[in-house]
Length: 301
Ligand SMILES: [Zn+2]
Image (cartoon, rainbow, N blue to C red; front, side, top):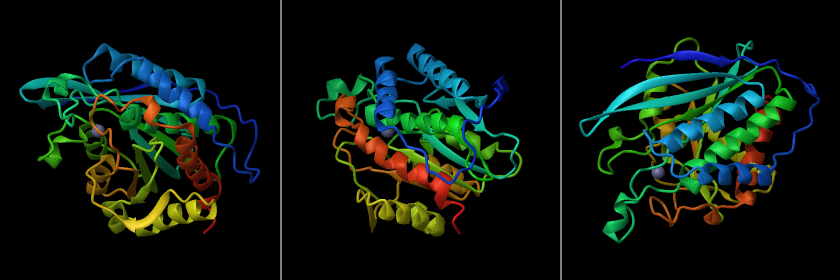
């Protein structure tokens, strides 16, 4: 394995507003536009030209928003083939020692192997929800962070590669980008980490993910309380199944990490996971909770 940490850009941050106490508006329509733009690139399968375009897309947005951007290259063996992956890290207010992390995966699964028709299994998943939705919300948070500073801490937006090339019966074959990121993390860990995945579903319902609830109950409570206060009823308080997602790699490495995920999605790992199954409103609901958490919730107690 090999890693390259390369500073691509360290921008000057223009603070249009300081810590005024007002929670900025999360723009769901703009986030949805960024979901569409990713899907227009084609499926973002590891090793493909399309995922390169998606990397360029994410990096150029982060640079535009004034983040310091690092990439982290690694290689993995999958069924005898060596594949190269790249995690992208956009750091806002990198000079601050107190940090929180938001993560999402940007790769899409090369196989639509939840289709009944096995002939479709070789078609890549378009990844409207499973891939593009989480990235879109993170990038909209980046836009917000470029205009308004959160109180007292910096934020790292982490875009994981190679989340979705696993085999169903083998947990360890999933989430390879986050595994590399977590195992090679140097320095002090962020105070908390929130992973979002499959949160664009226009029939949104987000129960408590089992590992999150058991590993970081206080953080889960805080997020779900914010949703309750904002009357975003799509955040459900029932404890649901354990999901092996990028947050679990972080938990394994000792991070205080949770996952916000709507895993009950009819089009999961099919050719029909397309933008029309997602909505700006769903992105806005999740984005609002995270924005509120960033600017109000985290410091309130
Ligand atoms: Zn997936």
